[in-house]
Amino acid sequence: MTMNAKRRRAHEKLAAQAGVRSVRRPLSPGTDDEFDLYYVRAGRKSAHPMVIIPGGPGAASVALYRGDRRRTATAGLDVIMVEHRGIGMSRHDDAGADLPPQALTIEQVVDDLVAVLDDAHVERAVLYGTSYGAYIAAGVGVRHPQRVHGMILDSPVLSGRDIDDARAAIRRALWDGTDSETADLAPKVRQLVGDGVLEPVSGQLAAAVYGLGGPALLDRQLDLLLAGRHGVWTALDNLTRRFIARKAPYRNEPDLVGRIGFRELNYGDVPDGKPLDPAVAFRDFASDPVEFEAEPYDLAAEMPKFSWPTVVVSGGRDLTTPPVVADRIASLIPGALLVRLPTAGHSVLDSRKRAAVQIAKAMAEGKIETLPARAAALDALPVGTVIRLFVAALGAAAAVESVMPGVVPRIVERVTATS
Image (cartoon, rainbow, N blue to C red; front, side, top):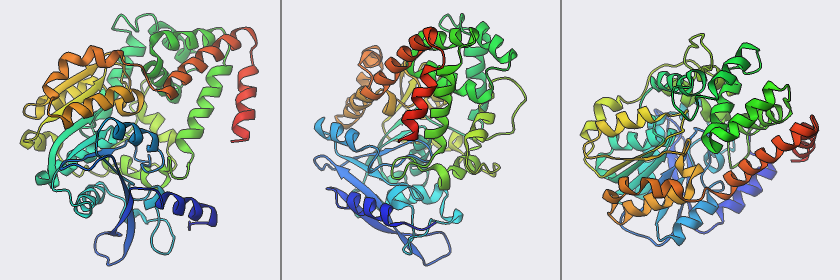
């Protein structure tokens, strides 16, 4: 696919924004071909800027996080974000064609970050990576340890076997109900799975609702399903598929790079045949699921060599990269500090933006030792506007569905048809 006129205009508009630059990068190993890799820097420049690496792979940086960079700059932080190769502004070669599969590997992404530091004349940076981005940050620590000043690993990924921990976490919470918060949810989930209402993909949707809105919000949705009121859930499932699988130019573009998660991090592990298997959901959502080959790094062996200040951030309700993985990472890195936000879900960077900024400020100011004691206060900070509106809208939709079945999906269909 080549860049069309509409996309080119959007690209040029983004490239003209303050702080946006490009650096020439090799297209792939063994070739002399190059392409433009874009990045953006915001805030007052410092000796050790913070490189924020989104999750995915698929999330863009320049356009998607524009408002977040503005907030972090206002908070006094110097932030760099790199447009991941194969996504957004870094999607195309010089001829305007999509980057080829051989250009899309974790090691090349890691080296891109260091090339950006070189271009920005930054000797050492703080790396803030969330989810997949945490693996990329750790990869910089493995390949280029001399460029790391500090590290924040948010909802982190450790290895291709994390899928086993994700399976155990979602089943413990939503199938077995082993903790008080989900004890009343699990029998409802088991009944809905037995009735064929909740398939594995719906299980991941349930995990997301639980992570974002807590047990009360999920409980209301389960009650509607048990009553035969499927409208809100169906609408939510359709929206999820639309915005996860669909390519949204310059915001979310998993179609080229999604293969990285499967090939190198085992996102689509062989299904184990048991209920609520996230591997089945990942395969269902993917536009191009490929089989797992190998991880680029053995982080369990490499992390004990990390010698810089490190904060590991984890949401207590994260069923995607569950707390047990964060705990393991914190135990591997010498001196790492674990910050657990009990009521947060996956990716504090995205779901608890104010908390993420406070954690980043503590790192920039050399005060990370205060963070574990502040975990409850950080957890209590207001959630972002988008998340708050989503939770409120879901609650309101549930109320409408309970008295006027079928209205919500018809409204959603009209809205999405015009978007």
